[in-house]
Image (tube, rainbow, N blue to C red; front, side):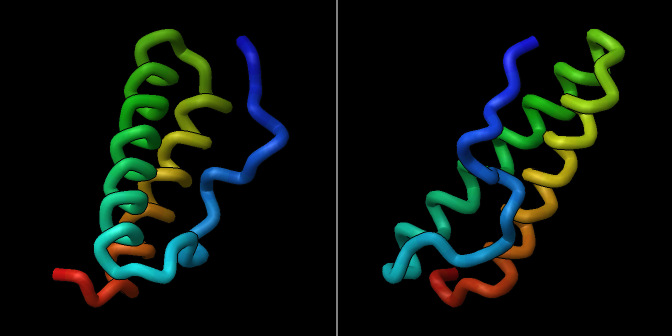
Length: 69
């Protein structure tokens, strides 16, 4: 399975100055992470499952820190 080493997607650091853009991006990070987590579980790939879980949590952290909603 291909691995994307060029970009760290599990970082909980803010990526956008605009609260709305940050909220949208964090939601996308959560969705992407959840999909990876479920896919890893389905194909029994613990690395992908773990990366997905970390991305999902990082997105949740970003949303908690953001004041858009």
